[in-house]
Image 1 (cartoon, rainbow, N blue to C red):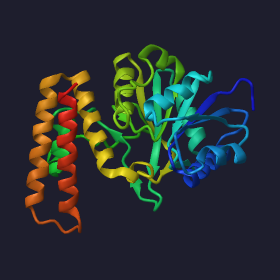
Image 2 (spheres, helix red, strand yellow):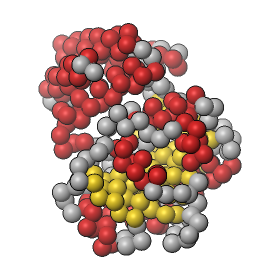
Image 3 (tube, rainbow, N blue to C red):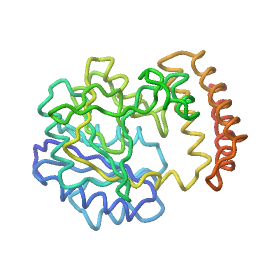
Image 4 (cartoon, rainbow, N blue to C red):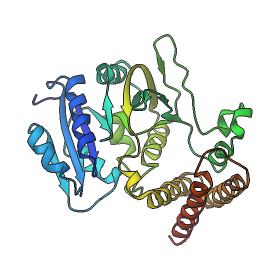
Length: 308
């Protein structure tokens, strides 16, 4: 490996061995070994992920945690263990396409004010995946869950953001991009700070982008490259707890950036939307059970947040 790499590739792993190896394979196919240093932080996997990485990729810096520290804390471990000017975060259940790495690096190098960059995202089946969103407010998430945003033109009331790529195939007006595939500028992190480790899972990427934007950095989305994301490979192992973490993290984001009243409004609006959606006939099998599970998770998250 080059002693002066351009990019530190950071992969956080938790019981996704096969997908993790596929992820690393895509990294070395998409990027030149001379350009990168690669760090895998294993959050207490029990499926042999750490050992498999050490065998298959001895050039990788492999860090093993004895407990699951969460995504943000593990990313901070890797970021502080590296020195490259750019950092690529890549989920263990994601993989770069051949042009993905180059597109992200080019975006960062061509735009000095870009603090974070993402690219197009597709599912394993090839369907487009939305990975750009507007910052959370007390109402935009509940409105989107209700299905009403299709009739609303105001961006401030929408949670999902559809990027508008110009002639250079970039949109640098994005609020935030999912951390499943996200390149960061180390100089920007030195100003805005690393991940807030209070976010165990979810919203840590949104919080980071919020702070980057507040410090004057732009968040850019490039249509030059793409990545594939299986999605939910780790979180599906304990769905109810992950849903609780999802709602708790959203409340933590609102409390941190918009105040306690915003948390109460969000929790009430989400509860109302989920409750009434259960009363409406839905075609998909298991929908009512899923909504009931979400209501339980929301109630538990609100209780945990209120106890802080």
